[in-house]
Length: 225
Image 1 (tube, rainbow, N blue to C red):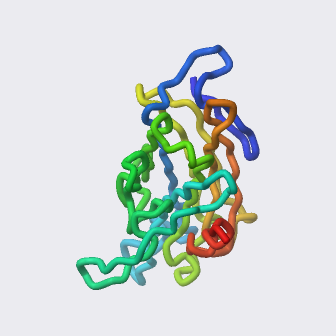
Image 2 (image 1 turned 90 degrees about the vertical axis):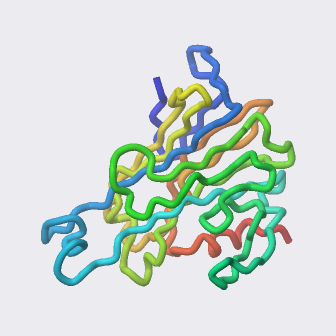
């Protein structure tokens, strides 16, 4: 049975308190969320009628950190097929414009723009047992795309969770939170981290909100000098 964590709690991913081991050759980090209904009725009040309100687009991001707690490889800049300039491509940041790490050991499966439906809305797959030893920690972040512009924030997000599922489909752990007034105006969330410890991997629930809706602002804290 999965362990439900509270903010700040840490567990070992390799085995549970009963001594049962988990297969970390491939671990799915699943993230999910719902958006509260507007008091005026209907999904976000006016999403499908009247004056349209922008849908919530939450994005999952992962930072691969070295022994100094920094992102060592910031990737490169490339031009997309549509002419856009993409930065951080094929570096140690996994996000919607660079979904697969060059090592092939961590990738984002896709971009769910609505959060509709049950189960995971976005997934990041990590081959923890194959991850290069130079990576000591993986930080998992969720941001609301253009949240500041659209006045969207985590105070309106409920049933949000992050969970870890092993290669055999066993749910190891889950950390849940729901929006409240303390999250009003907060457009990003440092959700959790996975880090090496004594030959195993630990999972820590963080749940730290931030005003910014851009993970680039958060990345500034992890740039190597």
